[in-house]
Amino acid sequence: MSTLSAPSFSPSSALLAAQFLQDDRQSFWDQQPGLAGTLISVAQDQGIYSEGDQATLFYKVVSGVVRTCKFLGDGRRQVDAFYLAGEVFGIEPGEAHRLAAEAAADCTLVAYRRRSLDSLSDGNEAVARHLFQFALQNAARAQDHALLLGHRSALEKLACFLLHWASRSTQQATVTLAVSRQDIADFLGLTIETVSRTLSKLEKDGVIKMPAARRVDLRNLGALRALTI
Image (cartoon, rainbow, N blue to C red; front, side):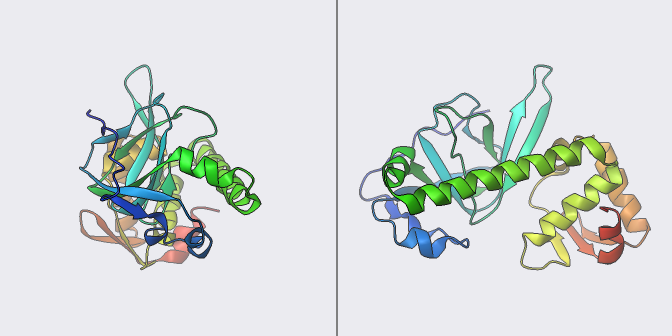
């Protein structure tokens, strides 16, 4: 799989980071001078960076979906997380990326120089606090994912996935799956056949309805939530 070459940070392509920081920290980041990035497009399944690459850049998703993953020695892939529009990824505690990042769908990203963020955080308590919160959120997400992989049935895993995906969308009763079933399987530690069979069972039981391959209507939220308890 090909991986992106380093983007150009020429003045003509530089964009203020605040233009694309759309999450609940927008007002904070709007006040940070000197943080600029470059807008890039990434085709579906193209690599953004590989495990072990130098973490000289981090990214903001403008549109599309990014997956971070690890490739195991036997060729299997474990998807660690999905990042949607408005979310940041690629900020590492060390000098290298611990996971690979790929476009799960066609993406538009903003790439930022890590050194710009390091400069901002040096001696700036507010920036350092926000980075600490970012690290805590990532740690909590990783813990939740580990528990999901280790202690739930296929039905429970898929119910958790659908509810979590719905919580990140504008229409919580309808989930548009911008990722493939193989992506879902690799995230949940299941086979693609098990994912398809479990979706079919949920639809047969009247819990969901699938009017299209990647659209899931959550018809019985109570029943879906009961599966996650």
